[in-house]
Image (tube, rainbow, N blue to C red; front, top):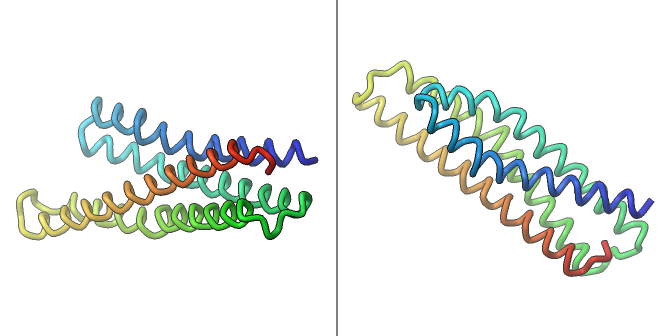
Length: 161
């Protein structure tokens, strides 16, 4: 049972961190290199719901398996256990914010921007807003990635949960 829970935690963190790495450093740069900016945006917009679904599922599995490990190992007051649960909760919260709040806003602004004449004042305003939302998404996903790496490091260091 403990081995299964440790495996579920490890595989969920691997998939979560790996999906962030792959999208940010492999898929998106390749997509934007080959396609026009508009086409690339369409492709990435199509990928995002699946990308965030992986995040939510991975986060839930990591959190639940961690909580069960803490229960079975009776490490409720362990500093490592508290840190792990807190960081996982923050990561999930950030993922939900990025996927359910920031992403839909960016999609709306991007759609509105496309209906405007490039170079117009309204277009520039929408472009600035989209850039802000994109930057927020990048920072949020970067934070999730860094926190995930920190948890993997903590897990490797403690090697008991």
